[in-house]
Image (cartoon, rainbow, N blue to C red; front, side, top):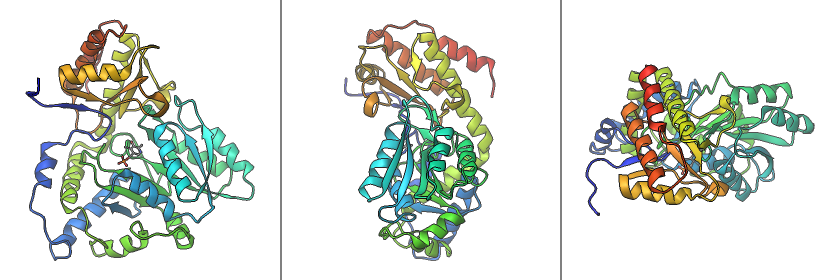
Length: 390
Ligand SMILES: *Cc1c(COP(=O)(O)O)cnc(C)c1O
């Protein structure tokens, strides 16, 4: 059947569903990005982003995917041969490592089993061993989108401080910003990396670096070449509400609308909504007799749930059946989890009945694909949602 009536269910953990309000905002005619009308848009989004990051520091906006902001964080702060400490929490942590490696940055890796977050104790020990302070940065993925595990950034900050180590703390919040509680200034983060297409409910195409004074000071001595990603050029142009090169103007219209929507709902309500949908999803998974990837309840993700299939079962075949029969896309397993897990995105513009539809599609798909499970997961999730009003 080629024609699919109704809305496609896009329940991958990003890009997420784009609200009509944002689509309409993006559809406005473009304006001159050097003209007098532009500066107020620029000032509005640059200022409006700060409370979303919970920072008073500048937020830089790139017309780029999240990977660009990863690269920007590194080239603005590091010199060739510098060392960073990274925690391999999953596939996205591996990709950030590869960027560092290609840029000629030395990486020290702390491994995990991909079922736990970055370990603050192990980070503290690695920094204590580094008496010569060769490590210039600690790079952590806040919400590991390949596994649905959240690393505890406040505890990592305390471990860095307890070791008395001056390394910059750089955090990827691409799938946690505006979905999961995140506090840049309170947690002493030096560079926050973020992207548009997940909690911010926008299309892909914008990414962000929020930068502390310490990171700005480090950028003065950083010797990696910086051109497109240069913080200095951005910050100089941003002071008057402009950009050093053509910005993604229509996405900035969308960003202004997204910030307004997040403020109308209230960030704490946004976080609570994501937590509640994560909890309902895990209840369904439990009732099916399946396992979530995340092992530590303190590290469960509100953005997405990664579900392990029983051995010998193909997660990709299950996803194919669900797409074919119910017009719903679920996230694929990435890296070493390929074909072993599927991921349910419950972030961004989302509500109870969208979750009900999503879980119904999964439960019907499990039966159709012949995956051994207990029925009743949807019922368990619905009962939880009905009982627990947000
Ligand atoms: C989506 C994602 C990325 C990659 O962003 P792109 O826009 O695909 O470059 C990086 N890190 C995390 C945690 C993500 O979820």
